[in-house]
Length: 124
Image (spheres, rainbow, N blue to C red):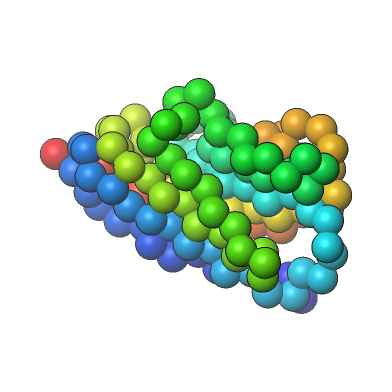
């Protein structure tokens, strides 16, 4: 049984930093796509960062580029370091995992497994 367990959300002020963690268990494929998504109230889920096994590169949404960094270890666990947070970063953040995928890794439909979500609130 595949499980993704997230931790690290919270309430911070604008300009602060926060790190989300996602521990993966039960996933045995060697080639996979892994990513972070977020969803704010009343908005669609959007991709934040992802790594596709086809090229091994880390991709970032324009809105977080230069502020967020995605990490992944050999156990498929992933962290999302978020710096210089803004109020518009407020959302529920999800880690996600899927099988081999060589296309756009920001498409939610390519992911088979999702974490429970971690709320991040940026407010003064």
